[in-house]
Length: 377
Image (cartoon, rainbow, N blue to C red; front, side, top):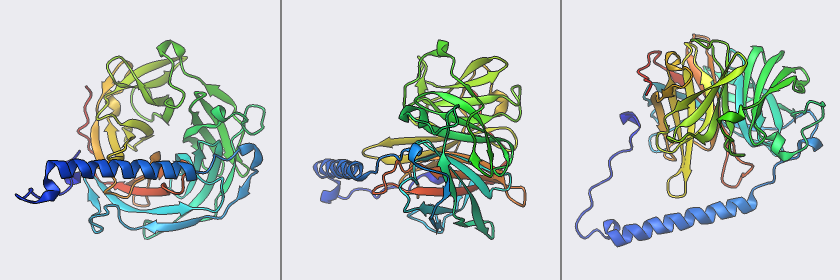
């Protein structure tokens, strides 16, 4: 964690101050744990089931988008977080039960039109509104079901779990996509146009000789490399697929074979997204959750020159955020350039269809430094 992201130091305990006595502290931690568990149980009880895409047609839906004006809850005027500047966000909600679970995000080159995919097997397309370079709203989006090779909506729940989407050609209005799926691990090639996302043209599947991925911890992050020795190659990283040294596992599809590389696990975070920066470096989105700390989010930068088959990469931490900041279960990641050519990072949350405890939020940061001190290990 960078110095600028460290919380203010806690006050020193005073003699006789019962709030700092060990027994009282243990009791407080126990109460916090019980409260968190109680909220989680209540939230799980109120969470809505995932919608069945077989029963959902393609249509425009009603949404509400409220601007998020600050990121740090304890210091609303703070905008600088290391190399990143917070430039705004949106809290998005909808009365539609099919709205939620958005795990992957892709944007047009100007950052306005978008496509998102959900782990319920749905796509959503729409247009973001900006005012003076900051997110201001969202035009009513369209949703529809992701389809099987047959052209029908995906039937089995294990086939629907879409976790990442990448625009690889054209635009959201008329282009080509890659979509990565978890549980039934595969990456599909799709078209996108006025009728939404097409049926898949083909699939790329994992090489089983590298071990079997857990059903719910497989393909979670995906991008296409734009620079370096594997320029144009597809790359994917598992959410939590560790090798014998405890490192995260990723793959590069070069030629007809998949080549492995590894990422140092720093602090037990899971991988939830990856995007390619304008200079070719990789931007990694990570998440961690436990009962006492709640949710955490991190952004890591990986130098493209260090990426090669068999490499073990560490990179540079650009941002570490906790519940002291306005975050949720951040999973979708996209990068674009604004009208002045500056790099804008967009991060979208997956509410797990649990509106009692979680939210769908879209956050944007501006990357101020093009330099990197990232290193390979």
